[in-house]
Length: 200
Image 1 (cartoon, rainbow, N blue to C red):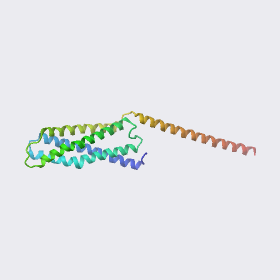
Image 2: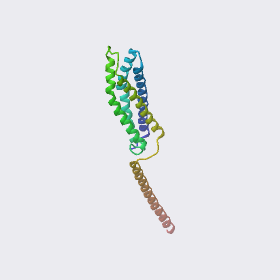
Image 3: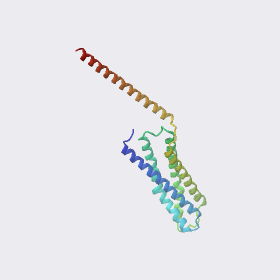
Image 4: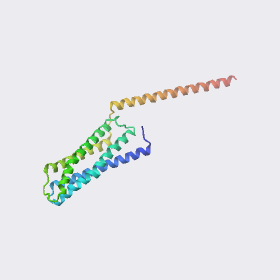
């Protein structure tokens, strides 16, 4: 079902805003994770990991979920559809996977935040620190790919999309044929009325 122009613009605004916010929050998370891994200042490292935990749960996760849901709504309410074009389908798959990976990575993030919350800690597991940098870097790449797909909209319809397009064309052709037939009948009646008026 195609949404009204006002509703479509609202859904698109929500989707674009949440997607940009998601990207920005992940970029900030990456900066914090790098600072936590390379800084020699214990207070800065502790603060970075504490902020990463808050940023994850109160910014990144909500924005990821809103971006996913608003993207689905926007796709279903426009001519693009959700399964008609490959670029929309690829965006959906990447967004779903990125959201799932994000939710999985909340566990090591919570672990680092928990360690940072202890005042006596002076060292952090390097594997976890590296994981934060790698994961957030990969997330940024995925979000850049999503942005590029939205901007360039590569051509190519899925089989489902081609079938739907053919059905729509056949429906339009049938309506046109019915209209032509109706107009022909009207013309015949008008012609008959003219002839009848002429002979009378």
